[in-house]
Length: 632
Ligand SMILES: Nc1nc2c(c(=O)[nH]1)N[C@H]1C(S)=C(S)[C@@H](COP(=O)(O)OP(=O)(O)OC[C@H]3O[C@@H](n4cnc5c(N)ncnc54)[C@H](O)[C@@H]3O)O[C@H]1N2
Ligand code: MOO
Image (spheres, protein in one colour):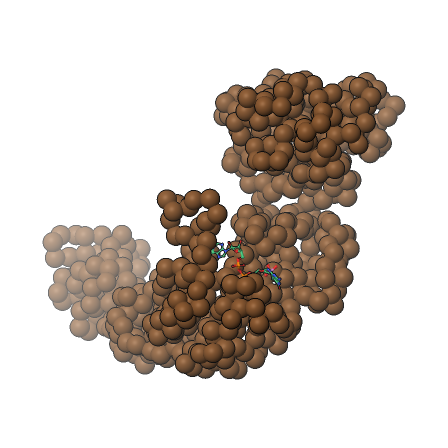
């Protein structure tokens, strides 16, 4: 098994889903439960009221119950005296109306004369301040339709209407079977070469949200006999089973063959990316889906196949929340697959903008950060920057609207700010930030660009790009840049010249990054040929990524900020302080988001956190430096 399994089809998503839905009848039965227990369950049938609410006429206010007709003629000039028991009875809100009485006068509208008598100066009209039988619910009326997911406020109506027992859809029992020798389910077992079973937790959570009853099984190792037994058990004990990983064409990917032997493989291989090797199968009349192992692929396979399947079985509508937005970066895509791109969304100057995130199938943080998904259809080679696209939202638009959009150079302090106010940040280097600002795609662009002639940071680059003089720099920090090396500096690196030493491996930042510009500036000053530096062409996009690389085997040194070296426990050879500022358009300076940003930069809390990290000075942080036109 396994090796004869290299043929994976490429069926379009809609076709695969339609075929699968048709092949699987709903396994969802019904049960009668107490209404009290019915929260988040789905009604199997319409629920009708067995009693009215209120079930009798009752007082809607505290006061006296009267016969309306007998109060007619009462006014300020002719107050009317009423006698207890003969003309009125005292009632409180919710009391049954005394027999024969048809109106309530509020306690504040009567003047007590003595224990037995009151006076009124206004007539009552029939049924005033009375909640009549069935005002809320009339016996026999429908309280909830069928296929309705029960909310807390529905519970009150069910109980008021006497529907104490209701018929709901059974919770679908779903098994989750992780597979693979490397998969472990506890941090303690997480030794080198092992992978934590994060997928099962995510899938379990998604199933709970859909109202299912998930069971996560112990990982099955890559052994056809053990896997077969685990799959049989999973099918037997559940209405539906998902296996995780082993869906592809590797030598240990047995799942598809086992399903083929014990049941039917309806689809293996769908034209979506991530999620391509998804298996849609059937065994003993029950559904079995093989989710790919990569976490992002597993999520999309669930969202695109399992979720619609369960929603259709439960008869629930598929909720769509979309926004039309302008794409900020070109996307290149394969014509073979429908590509599902995780994106952030932001609102800048009355325009919605969308920025793609990492496309790696293992990058789960891209799903955490994503505001939505942009689909590049099959047969498309990509989408050009500046085009308008539709994004399927994963977060509420109202929340996205509040966010400050930051595009540019990365620094750890962005995370400190993100903990204080809602922001979305994309790290494309200082030049990328200037470009994004030019295209009005961000509110703020963090930059650190040295002027090679004056050695002054940022001002000349901004002037060059924005000659109209309508920009400002919100002053940021001075941060210490230097060479990051392994603890103890085993290669004895002390200066830029040492980067060309035989056996020293460097890791670089991407072109357009201020740190890359600083490196090139320093190399040029010293007449060092970059081609003599091993690793000069290997580019990473953040200081932290460089620090992690230096920490790992095979890399010795990178240029970056002290804060990153300190955080990763690396040694640091300082070069000097550079200026890291925030470019902003004068037009938005008064916007609440910008004002809040400045407030955070000036706050004690922010400065204290910078001090804890070290390598920063922040004397002018938050003050505004207007960058006038060239001739100013
Ligand atoms: N020669 C080919 N190789 C691959 C193909 C292909 O068509 N031909 N498809 C690639 C694609 S696309 C995907 S997606 C993956 C799918 O792989 P599998 O479903 O077979 O899964 P594994 O290879 O076992 O694992 C992939 C990856 O995911 C991690 N993993 C597995 N289970 C879990 C879990 N429960 N929690 C967290 N992470 C998990 C695993 O450690 C691997 O890193 O195949 C490509 N290869
Ligand atoms: O298509 Mo795979 O599912 O990229 O990750």
